[in-house]
Image (cartoon, rainbow, N blue to C red; front, side):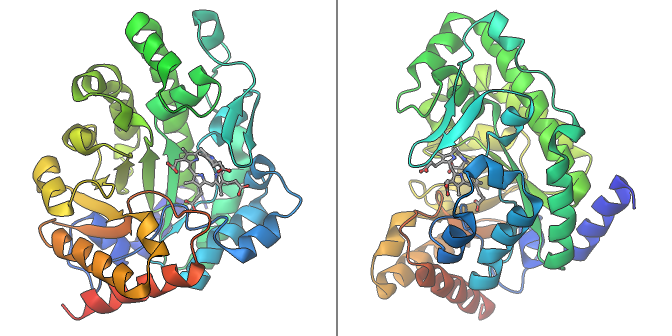
Length: 355
Ligand code: CP3
């Protein structure tokens, strides 16, 4: 089977799923649910299979990727799987010296801050990530009608790690480059857009039914700076995968003031955190896009009744949206009780089936 046939087959198998239908703003049997970071440390079975294997190494092992991706689907009955990887995997694949430090996040040995540094960012070739193609082939076989979401980090969020050299609260070096050398900044984001687009194409051609672009830290920017300095690169990524026709989700944290622009960048579905009610988010994004979100992940530490009350608020607010994928407003926190997530999936399904 060639790449086109694989793409077509995966799309046909999942076209009628609640998740894909909601992304397309079509009627659904129930509101679909998945959770960002649904695979990971909240699950004892994840901690067990990861024992003795470093994070980046596990991302390059198709057997481990397949098992870890399937774990939350088996346990929680979520409506979609998300490919187990990390946003820095394609950067590692083009040869950058970086690692993921437990409890810290991605750390880059030699940060990218000058024009000469840009030369280290070569384009991504599909052969650099052949383990992704292999893992997705295994996964789509196991998943059947359950969609697989591919993902990548957006140019701004990737640039922040590369310029800072690691996680950053204020993104000061990143912003210094963005304001101080706009041409170098634009060239850096453009290269990252190329790598990100190539990485998403590999996932779609291997059989992913949707893709999510994570611009987790872009909420640090004012709208005008986003429009001028970031949106062109993110739009390039969305344009590059538009012709496949798979739903494209765009997510960031603290992006209330950017939601309209993030939709305009080329998304079909806009991810919203818990700071903006979904009814208001729909006003900001427009009626031609679905929304994803937006329960505060910390709510899951409250008693069951409180979780249900907050989830119901999300569902009620989402009635104003033309399509809704239930999710958290950011990733599952590592100490979350797994049963609380399973009960939340059941609650959302039962509540919305009855409607
Ligand atoms: O289930 C899923 O959602 C898929 C897995 C996934 C991971 N990283 C696995 C991971 C996804 C979608 C990501 C994306 C990612 N990685 C983002 C965007 C999403 C977001 O949360 O905003 C970002 C910013 C990163 C960078 C990164 N990688 C961070 C901040 C961390 C956490 C560091 C820590 O230890 O607290 C990582 C490591 C990482 N990525 C882990 C997992 C499961 C934890 C490492 C481990 O289990 O050993």
